[in-house]
Length: 122
Ligand SMILES: Nc1ncnc2c1ncn2[C@@H]1O[C@H](COP(=O)(O)OP(=O)(O)OP(=O)(O)O)[C@@H](O)[C@H]1O
Image (cartoon, rainbow, N blue to C red; front, side, top):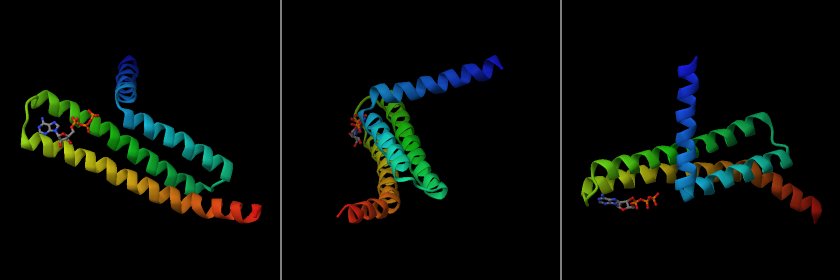
């Protein structure tokens, strides 16, 4: 049991490292808070919550893996190396793909509800 708790401790250390060192991770965390608050305010349904949760999870995981890949690349290839550059670019590309998915998901879930609110107010 102690071992499991210790493993969770290491995992949270990793999340905390990504949060404190990566500006993009903090931006994504702020976007997560905005998405959850919007979901609560607009009263989205269970399947919409699942899509939002999937988008948040994908962005968070890719951002953390990107941080790990950057660290590992700097460790194994501190000097300039074409392949090291490609590794970092591909890793960053994964984050962009997840972020595009998140933006599309947010638009599909929230836009119709926001437009309805605007129409009601007008
Ligand atoms: N060792 C290297 N060899 C060749 N190109 C590199 C190397 N390190 C970085 N690059 C290039 O510079 C880009 C930016 O790298 P950098 O390590 O600054 O990442 P970053 O996205 O700015 O991340 P962060 O700001 O979180 O450190 C990479 O995507 C890559 O194209």
